[in-house]
Length: 369
Image (cartoon, rainbow, N blue to C red):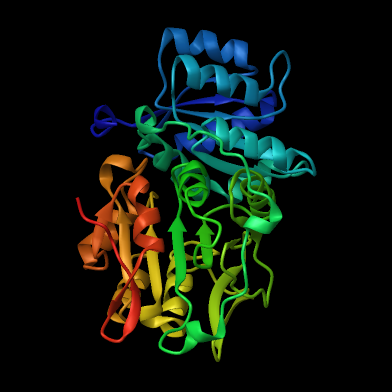
């Protein structure tokens, strides 16, 4: 948003807890780049506040009196789209509720516990403020819901690779890194993939436990199989693995077989899982038999790893600025020289799944025009 470049980002806090509202107001107000324009105890009070003055970003709880946060989010996005950061407790079935919120238009998600919320928020000040700043850059006018396609039957999913396919080349691996931009960017790419597409591994910056519900939702929407990655899972055609929150996910290879490895460890590029970690492992394990995609998101996670993939001979693609919600990660990768070509999401299926013979091997091809 260009009008926020010369003034603090205005934030409206919507939460039924007075303690949470006060704590968040103090934390957000301590950042010179942010300004708390108001607080509201429920969506009706929030709507009245928005009518008086439009905020740049809204932080929104899920469980509130008079109207739940997800219903309010849907109404807001249909009438007055404003970037929303969901701040909610993650308890059992609420995971599915928050996935619905992401689909409805929430740009970022902050998990808060049921107990000790004040202390948690204070410890998470940087995460909260970064999420708000990222959300403020979201261009909601360009975020269009993709049509839901029916899932194919089980016999249309994948068949085992033939032994002859390994004579001159190993299986192509697709590695995707994405952060801000809702989960819809990943959904649009995976929904477009054919049932026999190359194996896919995705690092989406998302909190722990959210990724399992995210994978289940995608599995119900896509023609390919989608699941949360488990340590030792094989990479299979027609299957996408989503890196679990709070675990680094790496690609490993034993002979002609690719698997994923999950690791703990420090934050890399301020994230766990980190796109840089995934891309570096793909560069080492798959080399020129890989395709790397870097998508919408704030920051530079993945830029260096994608460069390593390109240097190893992989095909490297970046999401173009016009289709990005936040043109951060793809732009940083482009500036490093890591991106071979920038494309809108609508053209990525052809680049990832088409092949041509080149230098005695099979390599992904990108159609022109």
